[in-house]
Image (cartoon, rainbow, N blue to C red; front, side):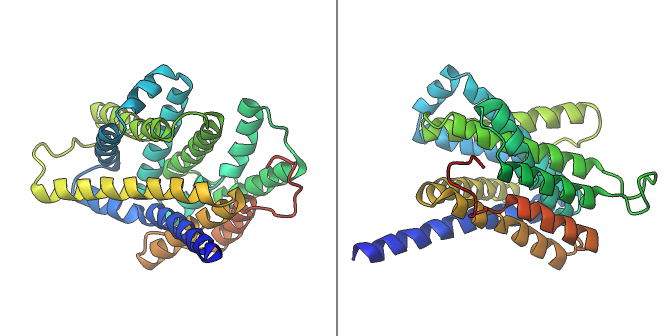
Length: 302
């Protein structure tokens, strides 16, 4: 009986992580629907994450005190906020496949940030990940008509994807560094960051005339859709925490890479992205850097 329960728990954890990966792999589609309806992704991110923060505070009111007392958690606020603002904006305006692949340069940033913030040495496996990730990025970003051509040069979505991936790596490193803090305070830091950074960026860009104002009097249908989006993101976050807590780190990393598959397949099917040879080759190198390498010794940091 205990073996059956353990297996059941294993598959529940796998399903939870797949749900999280599916959420972020498909998130570009509702974001584009909202933008087509007049709500910019930055305003939408601010609204949905604000609702999640309210829900978290009602559930764990003490999390706010922990967040205010621990200054290091404010780095998590900034990292998570930048991640969500950049990723949600990038997949709304750019080629989804290209954006997701560039976002998944996280192993490159994680190795470097772990060395800087956690004091971990860069082992052989970590160095190989860096080289693979850099090679993949070079292939994806290489201009179609050569280095002197502006056609195919990095664009705003590319820059947002790169910054978002760097911020997500910083987010993950800070989560490891602040593992002693309560899960509620860390979750509040991440969602508060998504709300504050997106709102501030949207306001600044609106003042500059680059982002339209949100609807002054949104209808009940739009409000209901925003609430549903917030609930979806909250459930995805809870699923990630639940699944990652029950499975080995290598298994978690392997499952989460399925986000790239979900995003690429849905984008190609709905004509929001394309798969050319450079993307396939560069994507293969980037994913090779992101996948867990089981042959390394356990004593070596990743």
